[in-house]
Image 1: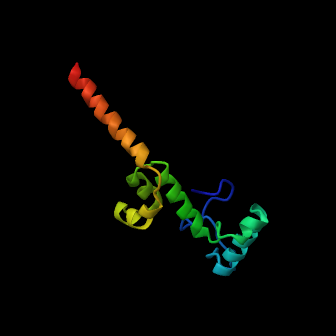
Image 2: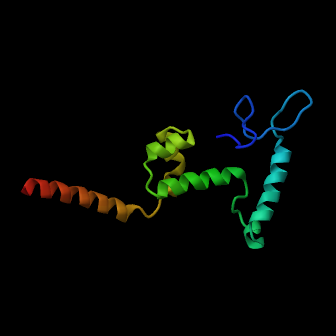
Image 3: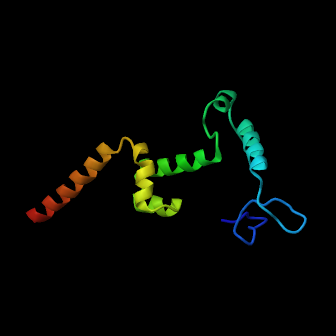
Amino acid sequence: MAHPAFGTAPDGRLFVAPRRHGAGQVSRETYSRTWRAARKAALAPAQQRSSLARRPYDLRHACVSLQLNAGVPATQVAEWAGHGVHVLLRVYAKCIEGQDQAARGRIEGALDMDGDQDER
């Protein structure tokens, strides 16, 4: 991923801080200050007081959880997240909810397809 107008730093970072002798890493303080300002601009007051997107990492967690709950295969989510499947499931398995009915439906569909083929 690259910024459409500015590209990335030579090491691949999207955001860099200006320095006298080349771009450097954005400091934690600057990143935190910018994140707080973005939350204030984007969220309603009640949401600002909540834990919603309190830290940038919370967005990553929400994204991975959403992908798993949407039924995206764990192998694909792990690749996108830069995890191994084992790590992904160890960390995020508790976030997967409400897929029992859909999973049972897929199994029943697979069994019905097999049954229809045997009857031909």
